[in-house]
Image 1 (cartoon, rainbow over the protein chains, first blue to last red):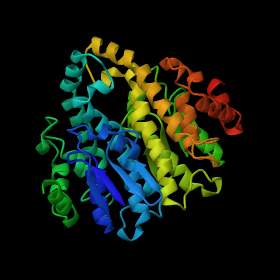
Image 2 (tube, chains in turn purple, green):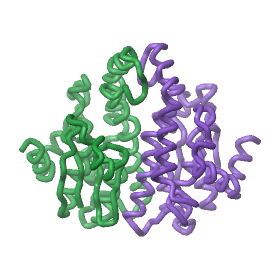
Image 3 (cartoon, helix red, strand yellow):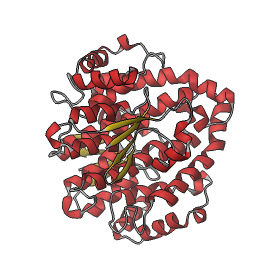
Image 4 (cartoon, rainbow over the protein chains, first blue to last red):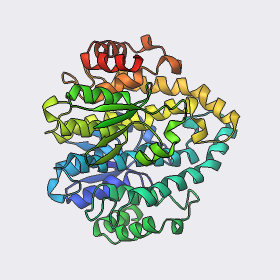
Length: 205
Length: 205
């Protein structure tokens, strides 16, 4: 399998999950700064022009929650999700769907306003509101979702690398990590995992 | 189980899926026009203040893709997803995640700009761009995703009620259904299913 990624994006979540699963994979950088996601070569991989994308023997997968669940289901020995319990699995998926469709969308309004509007004044308005929306999302996670020590409680799941990934956006989104002590402790716990260290080391290499 | 819904929202997708699964359930309207989603009673059900929410014997589930996969996994006899094939299941999830995090978000910018900005001029700017974004999403689905006759090909899945649900937003979002003949044919095919007829009849009752 090959993961297409760029540091700083949500591709970090499946990247960590692949490491945790102990599976053989390669990773290829798609340089978002240089606009490589819009190149003909990459659009042939992922017509959406986004990362992550996961190339598998059966074809390409896109959308972070789908890739994360695929990794968990494909490598059950790694125990990355409660695969035999539809309700518990749905709770995992609900968390990941919230990250994807609410928190990540709130984040994108800081720099990607051109997706949804046309005027510079609108972009500026969105940028101003993004910190408040991000803080509201993290507050919801802190108060209602993160059970501790891991997102789903005692068991580490595919929710954990996803939360870790988006929590790293806090400071650039003008959200104070110390306002969310449970998430801050989760970030620290994640940072100590060998899989996480290995992926982050590769990012800065 | 009890589904909390409001006509015209994406709650229609799990509503149809529950019918297709042949499961006993009740449905309760949450009047979005009257702001009932923000009532203390409903926030106790779903602190996010959105529909759908599904009350189960084990607790509440939120987020449409998670609810849809839960219905498919909980009632395997209904064959609403390729449950024994992680790659095929991931394709189902990828489609549903795209609807949730890209198409639905594009739609929300027509009327819910206050989620992401503060000025009336920004809301107006977002409203103007929404039809173009919705058309781009439907074009991606028409060209790249909808295999036919159902979204995933020969097998009807939880992707189908979700596509049917959001395709019903086309006209109010100033998108011409006739520009997307494969989706239009899919809508017609869906409209003929007894489960769909039954749910829509209940909406207008």
